[in-house]
Length: 376
Image (cartoon, rainbow, N blue to C red; front, side):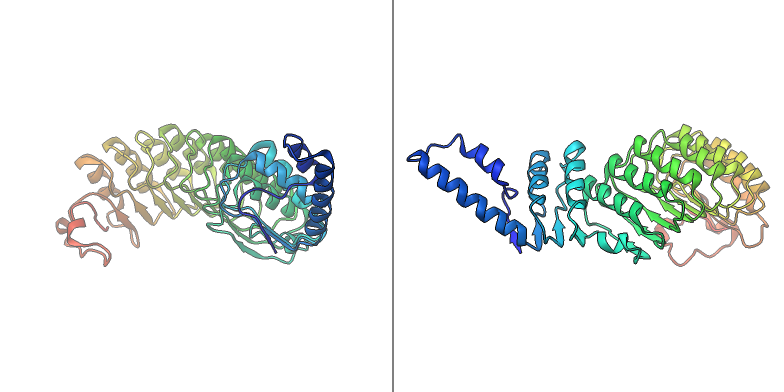
C-alpha cells in the first residue's frame, strides 16, 4: 500500500520539470537524482495495489498529477480520492478516465467498478461517501459498461454536483436494459442543470419506481420534472423535500401530476409553494393514482387551502394529506375540513383544534402540537 498525504506521486517527466528549477552541487548529481527517481517511481507505482488520498483538500492540479501517475500503475486494485470536493471540470474528467483505464482496478472511492462492469451488483448503497464529481463520472461509465441487474442505487450526500448527476442520469437514460427501481440522489449540490438531466432520464424510464431529490437547490425545475411525469409510466414515489421550490415549480409539477397515472406518493415538504395550491388542487381532480401528498411547511396561504380542498374533495384516490405548519387561516382550514369530512379511511394533518371534533391526537403528537394539527 502506498500512502502519501501531501502530494500525488510524481511521474518522472513531472519530477524532472520541477527539478529543473532546483540548484544542486553539479549537473552529474542532478542526472543521478533523475535516474534514481525514475527507477523508484516506476517500480513502486508499477507494483502498488492501493492508493488512498482521502480528505486532503486536493484541487484540480493535484487531480491532473495523479491522472498522469495512474498510467504507471499496472497492479492497482483500489483507488480512493473521496472527500476532495474541489476537483471538478476537465481535471475530474481526466482523473476519471485515467482511473477507468487501469485494467486491474476493482474499486474507486468505494464504488465497486469491477463488479458493476461484470453485472454482479443488484443493490448499491454509497451514502455519505463524498465521492464527488469524479466518483459520479466513474460510476456513470461503470453503469454504461454493465449493471443491467442493478435495482437500487443510493447516492445521498456525495457532492456529485450537476456534472456527476448528469453523467449518471445520461448513463441510465442510455441503458436500454436498466432495471433500476430506486434512485436516491438527495443532498448532492444539484441545481437546475442537473435537475433537467434527471427529468430527461425520468421521462423515458420504464423501471424507476422511487426517486428522491431532497435537499438540493432545484428552484426552476418544476416544469421540466412535470413534463417528465406526463410520459413516465413507472414512478410511484417522488420526494422533493427542501428543494427550494417556488410557486411556479409547484404549478409545473401540478401539470405533470394531472395526467400521470402511476405516481402514488409525492412529498413537497419544506418549500415555498405559496400560490400553487389551486393548480395542485386542479391536478388532484384528474389524477387517479396519487394516495399521499405532503405539502407541510410550504408557506401555503388560505387561498391555497381552498384550492387544495376543491381537489381533495374530487380526488378518487387521495387518502393522506399533510399540510401542517402552513398559514392556511380559518378559511383554508375550514375548506379542507369540509373536503375530507366523512371520507372513510382518509387521514389529514392541518391547522385546527382537535377538541372541536372530539378526536384523540395520534401517538406522535405531544400537547404542544395540538394547536397546529388535526386528524380527520
